[in-house]
Length: 339
Ligand code: NAI
Image 1 (cartoon, rainbow, N blue to C red):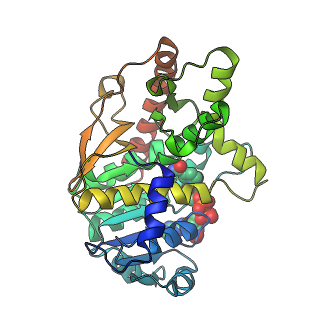
Image 2: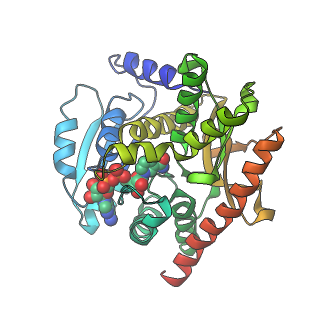
């Protein structure tokens, strides 16, 4: 498993070495946004990326011109919102990251974003299915619990769905869970790696502290769980209406993309938590579920089960599954009603 420090230390060191083992095109849809810009910057620093395609409905060529001056080898191109622009951004790509859509304002849940973001993700998924049907699709746009099923439905409708290549990016939950326990325990967050399962919103985010040998109880445990589940709200509040997490999210998205590239380029034991088409809780109505997933050249290599958990964690999981199944159905239903 890769901690933030290990990944970014490695990225920094390698970004000044000339050797990259393989060429990979990576595409960002929504590249000029609060997440898109720093995410594109971090991808430009990654020597595993040979081409970076930046698409947005505004400003992508400007962002590409700016980032393109950074002295790393990858070629950066920005694409305007024309049908051919989107197609060109997608053709031949290995990874498509989608942070396009609106972020939360104070008082909003991620589900409140559904009405706007569902159609944005549906339309971008259609383009990805047409022009990059074999790429890994990484969904960042919220509500992830619904936008991932939306993408799956679109790919199914076009006959190109590969469950091993679709990922909801939940890495930020793990990053936060690891950072927050280090603050409670006074440890180095780079050495923490808390497993987080379920989905990516409020009560569907379930941190499994016990699996890292921690044994918080009472108020301290409740406060920790609350902070992991609603950590995003801290940022939304602090930004006072100007958006949600962008910088920490960019780091989390870049880490996940880096892990996929490492796995694609032959590295073994690359494990990241992610929200995927999963057999674990299909019987509870959850066709998608986030747990630790081993990545490989074909995308999902192995989905790890949740494993041994405490009674308290089981209660959190029960609440999660009930909410999550509704979020998933909502996404599926949306595509049925608005194909
Ligand atoms: P933002 O508003 O700063 O940027 C969104 C970008 O998407 C804008 O540049 C906009 O022009 C672009 N866009 C809108 N419609 C588009 C379309 N049809 N095609 C291409 N680009 C389009 O928002 P921000 O802060 O970057 O957040 C983006 C999304 O990421 C939100 O839905 C937010 O809730 C989500 N998010 C997800 C997290 C996660 O952990 N998965 C964490 C934080 C945010």
